[in-house]
Image (cartoon, rainbow, N blue to C red; front, top):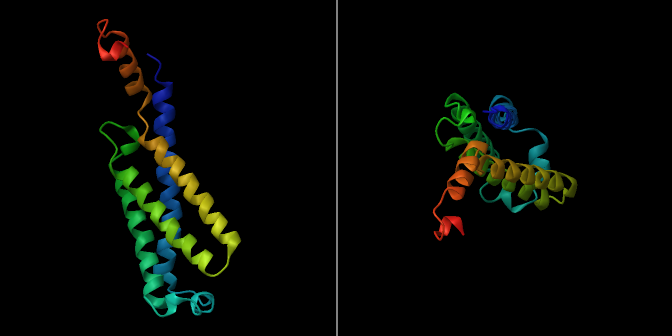
Length: 161
Protein backbone atom coordinates (compact mmCIF):
# COMPACT_ATOMS: atom_id res chain seq x y z
CA UNK A 1 0.00 0.00 0.00
CA UNK A 2 1.25 3.47 -0.85
CA UNK A 3 1.76 5.36 2.43
CA UNK A 4 2.94 8.56 0.78
CA UNK A 5 -0.46 10.33 0.99
CA UNK A 6 -0.67 9.53 4.72
CA UNK A 7 2.87 10.74 5.32
CA UNK A 8 2.29 13.92 3.32
CA UNK A 9 -0.94 14.63 5.22
CA UNK A 10 0.74 14.01 8.59
CA UNK A 11 3.55 16.35 7.55
CA UNK A 12 1.09 19.04 6.51
CA UNK A 13 -0.86 18.71 9.76
CA UNK A 14 2.37 18.91 11.75
CA UNK A 15 3.46 22.00 9.80
CA UNK A 16 0.10 23.69 10.46
CA UNK A 17 0.37 22.86 14.16
CA UNK A 18 3.95 24.16 14.41
CA UNK A 19 3.13 27.33 12.46
CA UNK A 20 0.39 28.28 14.91
CA UNK A 21 2.61 27.48 17.89
CA UNK A 22 5.08 29.97 16.45
CA UNK A 23 2.44 32.61 15.64
CA UNK A 24 0.65 32.49 19.00
CA UNK A 25 3.81 31.73 20.98
CA UNK A 26 5.61 34.85 19.82
CA UNK A 27 2.47 37.02 19.99
CA UNK A 28 1.15 35.89 23.37
CA UNK A 29 4.38 35.34 25.26
CA UNK A 30 5.85 38.67 24.11
CA UNK A 31 2.76 40.45 25.43
CA UNK A 32 3.19 38.78 28.82
CA UNK A 33 6.93 39.45 28.95
CA UNK A 34 6.88 43.04 27.64
CA UNK A 35 3.45 44.28 28.69
CA UNK A 36 1.49 46.88 26.80
CA UNK A 37 3.64 48.52 24.10
CA UNK A 38 4.15 52.28 24.19
CA UNK A 39 2.26 52.81 20.91
CA UNK A 40 -0.90 51.09 22.19
CA UNK A 41 -2.45 54.07 24.04
CA UNK A 42 -1.68 56.39 21.12
CA UNK A 43 -3.23 54.03 18.59
CA UNK A 44 -6.34 53.00 20.53
CA UNK A 45 -6.72 55.81 23.08
CA UNK A 46 -9.13 57.79 20.90
CA UNK A 47 -11.40 54.80 20.23
CA UNK A 48 -14.24 53.51 22.38
CA UNK A 49 -11.87 50.74 23.54
CA UNK A 50 -10.26 53.34 25.81
CA UNK A 51 -13.58 53.60 27.65
CA UNK A 52 -14.94 50.09 27.33
CA UNK A 53 -13.42 47.73 28.27
CA UNK A 54 -10.43 50.04 28.75
CA UNK A 55 -7.02 49.94 27.10
CA UNK A 56 -5.43 47.70 29.69
CA UNK A 57 -8.33 45.23 29.61
CA UNK A 58 -8.37 45.28 25.80
CA UNK A 59 -4.66 44.51 25.65
CA UNK A 60 -4.79 41.71 28.21
CA UNK A 61 -7.93 40.14 26.70
CA UNK A 62 -6.08 39.98 23.40
CA UNK A 63 -3.04 38.48 25.13
CA UNK A 64 -5.23 35.86 26.84
CA UNK A 65 -6.88 35.02 23.51
CA UNK A 66 -3.48 34.46 21.93
CA UNK A 67 -2.27 32.40 24.88
CA UNK A 68 -5.39 30.23 24.73
CA UNK A 69 -4.71 29.59 21.03
CA UNK A 70 -1.09 28.75 21.91
CA UNK A 71 -2.23 26.36 24.65
CA UNK A 72 -4.58 24.57 22.27
CA UNK A 73 -1.81 24.28 19.66
CA UNK A 74 0.60 22.81 22.23
CA UNK A 75 -2.03 20.32 23.45
CA UNK A 76 -2.69 19.25 19.85
CA UNK A 77 1.05 18.71 19.34
CA UNK A 78 1.46 16.75 22.58
CA UNK A 79 -1.52 14.58 21.60
CA UNK A 80 0.24 14.02 18.24
CA UNK A 81 -3.01 14.79 16.45
CA UNK A 82 -1.05 15.21 13.22
CA UNK A 83 -0.68 11.41 13.11
CA UNK A 84 -4.48 10.98 13.09
CA UNK A 85 -4.38 7.79 15.15
CA UNK A 86 -7.63 9.07 16.62
CA UNK A 87 -9.89 11.86 15.35
CA UNK A 88 -8.40 15.32 15.62
CA UNK A 89 -10.23 17.48 18.14
CA UNK A 90 -7.90 20.07 19.60
CA UNK A 91 -6.20 21.15 16.36
CA UNK A 92 -9.50 22.16 14.70
CA UNK A 93 -10.58 23.86 17.93
CA UNK A 94 -7.34 25.86 17.95
CA UNK A 95 -7.84 26.88 14.33
CA UNK A 96 -11.44 27.91 14.97
CA UNK A 97 -10.35 29.92 18.02
CA UNK A 98 -7.59 31.49 15.91
CA UNK A 99 -10.25 32.77 13.52
CA UNK A 100 -11.80 34.71 16.41
CA UNK A 101 -8.40 36.06 17.45
CA UNK A 102 -7.82 37.32 13.91
CA UNK A 103 -11.27 38.93 14.02
CA UNK A 104 -10.21 40.73 17.23
CA UNK A 105 -6.97 41.89 15.65
CA UNK A 106 -8.67 42.93 12.42
CA UNK A 107 -11.34 44.85 14.33
CA UNK A 108 -8.63 46.91 16.00
CA UNK A 109 -7.03 47.64 12.65
CA UNK A 110 -10.32 48.72 11.07
CA UNK A 111 -11.18 50.78 14.14
CA UNK A 112 -7.99 52.79 13.77
CA UNK A 113 -8.22 53.07 9.97
CA UNK A 114 -5.14 50.90 9.53
CA UNK A 115 -6.39 49.35 6.31
CA UNK A 116 -3.09 47.66 5.42
CA UNK A 117 -3.05 45.96 8.81
CA UNK A 118 -6.72 45.05 8.43
CA UNK A 119 -5.98 43.46 5.06
CA UNK A 120 -3.14 41.45 6.60
CA UNK A 121 -5.53 40.16 9.26
CA UNK A 122 -7.97 39.20 6.51
CA UNK A 123 -5.22 37.22 4.79
CA UNK A 124 -4.29 35.49 8.08
CA UNK A 125 -7.98 34.73 8.66
CA UNK A 126 -8.32 33.31 5.14
CA UNK A 127 -5.22 31.15 5.50
CA UNK A 128 -6.48 29.87 8.84
CA UNK A 129 -9.87 29.07 7.33
CA UNK A 130 -8.12 27.13 4.56
CA UNK A 131 -6.02 25.26 7.15
CA UNK A 132 -9.19 24.44 9.12
CA UNK A 133 -10.82 23.10 5.96
CA UNK A 134 -7.78 20.90 5.29
CA UNK A 135 -7.67 19.61 8.88
CA UNK A 136 -11.40 18.82 8.86
CA UNK A 137 -11.30 17.01 5.50
CA UNK A 138 -11.06 13.22 5.70
CA UNK A 139 -7.65 11.62 5.45
CA UNK A 140 -6.80 9.87 2.14
CA UNK A 141 -7.26 6.41 3.69
CA UNK A 142 -10.71 7.37 4.98
CA UNK A 143 -11.69 8.67 1.54
CA UNK A 144 -10.40 5.48 -0.07
CA UNK A 145 -12.37 3.29 2.35
CA UNK A 146 -15.52 5.34 1.73
CA UNK A 147 -15.07 4.96 -2.02
CA UNK A 148 -14.44 1.21 -1.71
CA UNK A 149 -17.53 0.70 0.45
CA UNK A 150 -19.61 2.63 -2.08
CA UNK A 151 -18.28 0.47 -4.91
CA UNK A 152 -19.05 -2.75 -2.98
CA UNK A 153 -22.63 -1.75 -2.10
CA UNK A 154 -25.33 -4.06 -3.44
CA UNK A 155 -27.13 -2.80 -6.57
CA UNK A 156 -30.14 -0.61 -5.87
CA UNK A 157 -28.95 0.60 -2.44
CA UNK A 158 -28.50 4.33 -1.86
CA UNK A 159 -24.72 3.92 -1.58
CA UNK A 160 -24.53 2.39 -5.06
CA UNK A 161 -26.67 5.06 -6.71
